[in-house]
Length: 399
Image (cartoon, rainbow, N blue to C red; front, side):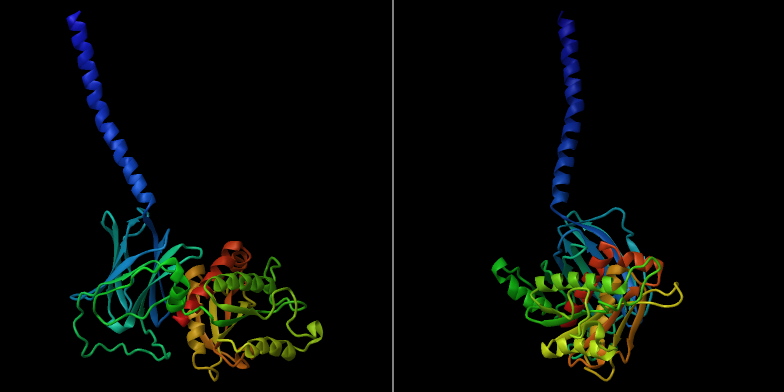
């Protein structure tokens, strides 16, 4: 009998020894899962190049808080994303190799931090790092390198002659639904979080959108369908859908938004009886009478060949000198969101950008004559992304 009790006791001890590690592992897994759920997941990293600038965008599942450091020997811009973890699906190294950027590395620096390292070939005044929150991707960090412009729209000199060696520079940025803030001279600087009561002031200071008068012009309408895609999608419908979503986004940021049309109608009071010039002038009148800060005419492109594709920004070269900057920012914002090919920013003689008194641009979001881009812009996802891209460009322009 004693022997039976001995074996039962031994069996219980053995079982307990086997179960304890499993229980501890289960507890650790539970703790890890709980910790990850409260953290930001870094889900993507992408880059684009338009000849004048390289843009790197880091995608996240939540608004981000980060610190930026500038290191020398070799020159690197380092961004530490706080309370974040790296998706295992991400490519940890991107080779870019253009005249602005050498390569990009991203890794889990420690259990709470994702580190991004960009090997840069530009001086300290020729890069910009900022956060974008909200929209189709909840959190993003944008890093621009190249021929950036100052607040007057003048190009910054890329020459590094006489530049001082980079010192370790740390800047902490809290999550904000915003566009870029001008980068300070090398020194430690911390941006403190604001209370919710200060949100309006924060948006105004960071994005510059609060109180801005913005006129949106959805191209065509009423008896004028605009271009028609291979499956019958009409340009006038796409432009109105994008404009309505864009208005919603801008109003959220505190902007004062006016639409040349908010339904499937002509803008001129003469409606279908108006001449082309009368219809176009009616659109300009809305912006001029409202004394708008900017005017954006939204269109879809079309060509005889269905192979044509991409996004183009237009401006009137003899108009307001800030128009090209506005066209550039909006074109880049759309490309970042939709992933369309850049067709550049071009000067034009279009009536609506020539006869408006403020910075103005006409943007061709994509080609409705291209079957893939027609399908994209007939989808809710395409509409949201196009609107978000234009909103990003506007915020970048005012930032």
